[in-house]
Image 1 (cartoon, rainbow, N blue to C red):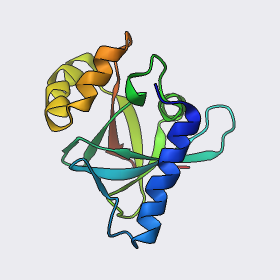
Image 2 (spheres, rainbow, N blue to C red; image 1 turned 180 degrees about the horizontal axis):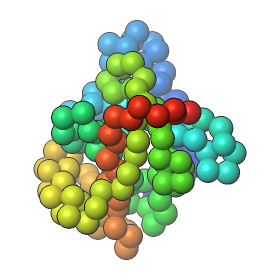
Image 3 (tube, rainbow, N blue to C red; image 1 turned 90 degrees about the vertical axis):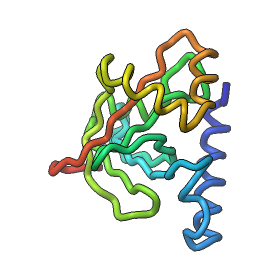
Image 4 (tube, helix red, strand yellow; image 1 turned 45 degrees about the horizontal axis):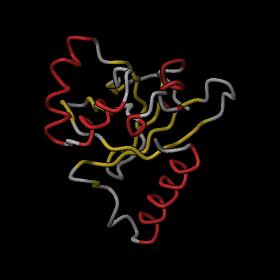
Length: 147
């Protein structure tokens, strides 16, 4: 499973590709739109931004996967948004938008998971590696304040 240091390095490299290419490369990864997710730290209260992908979008809602590469622990960004659901999202290089995060209900996950794994089969492999059920997070437009 990827270490925190490896995940941070991957985020830095991704941001570097975006910066060096002037945003021409890096906003699509494995056929999925990339996004910047800014959460509020659950302990620090400070904003934290990570690069993720979204295998599914439904209308204005964006679905992200809290896989952490199939690790047995949830990613930090997931723990942050679980405690502070008001987030900011920049999808595919667009403007930052305030959104509210929520974990997909069991019924939603049952409907969305096949679509997620059809578009990005690596998530099925991640689920097989861990005993935890990998959460799907739905990001929906919000009129509230964000980090």
